[in-house]
Amino acid sequence: MTTRREFLTVTLAGGAAAALAPGLAAAAPKSMSVVHESSFIKAFDEFFVKKLAPDYEKMTGIKINYEPVSVGSMLTRLTTIVETKSGPEIVHTGINWPHLFDQGLVDVSDVAGEIGKKLGGWHDNVHDAVVVNKKWKSLPWGNIGQLENYRTDWFKEVGVNKFPDTWEDLLAAGRLLKKKGHPFGFELGHGFGDNHGWLYPLLWSYGGQETDRSGKTVTIDSDETAKAVDFCRRFYKETMFEDVLGWTDVNNNKAFLGEQISCTNNASSILVVAKRDFPEIGKVTDHALNPQGPKGRFHLLNVQGHAIAAHAPDVAAAKAFLRWLYDDKQLSAWLTAGDAYYAPFLRAYDNHPMWEPEPRNLPYKESLKTSRLHAWPGPPGLAASESVAKYVIVDMFAKACRGDSTKDVIATAASQLKQIHKVK
Figure 1 (cartoon, one colour):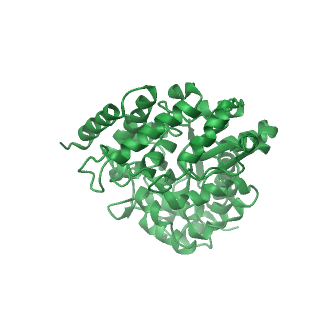
Figure 2: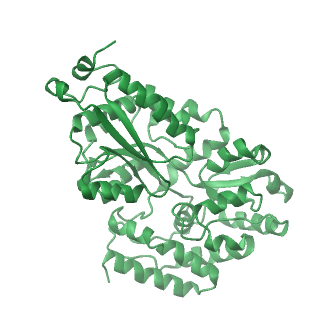
Figure 3: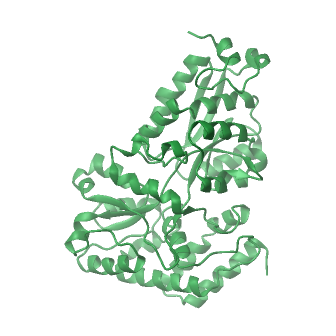
């Protein structure tokens, strides 16, 4: 058994000690903490706590403490950690958070480069989320996709044997399904994921966008946006369960599993729960890519990663742990425990065995090619997050569905975006 001192002074096969200089070995920390938003896949968290953390402690003598926070609370927790310069050394990041906390996170470009070199390189679009001023501020482990979840049996009842490829075709199918008592249920309320997960892709698929690439020109007021809004209004009125206007992220899951709706936009968690608790529903549940519009097919990028807080007393030790965690032996097993809920951004994992047990999850892998951050094509900084936090795009569509005119909802969104981006 390698001693703790030997481990910390010699580069092991897993690469966990590569970041530590010999002189640091004696002062290596006795423990480090990792804060994570609780996963919808319980086994993913359990694998970290029951397998990965004990293995690392056994090998190095460094105890890895795991601090879970409730779903939707991680951004608040991360804000506190960065502002107080205290708390866990290794922090969970999502979406565009590395851009929001640039100064509070350590540059991990060296680790990212090593991981990429070993595992086939990183997907190009992940750079948008985690590279800030040419420095990697987080190491992604995967993407939480937002795709179409639907009932194959009910779709077949109305003659739809393959999920529609375009929004217009999905609208046509939805009309038939609603008449049969199987409406759609897409969130239009103030949740944090399932609303953005389909409304931004819908906007982009018609050619609408919040700003230009620079973020200095608000471009939401366009014919393309108007077409997206007009479609959404029809989609809501002709296919939807009316309650969706007040839904948050839990409601569509409950409605689907309660057999109230035939289609929604969600992560793969509905299928996971269905197979476990509602096996008959699980048998007839499937996934599909978002439909395409006149300007293409899009999905929302939701990058999950690990960063090192700038206050970490031993950055080298934190990097050593992440090198070990992202070594194929550990990372591969951890992702597999997650039941393909997280689609990895490493090219060596494009055809990973994690996808084999459940082929219905393959669209989540495929969606990475067409996934973008909320602000796309604008910059992913503070203004983008403010727009999301104020539900500018969600409310633009939701108000149209409630009955407001297309002209008015777009004008309101344009005014809000100009204030947020500080442009005229």
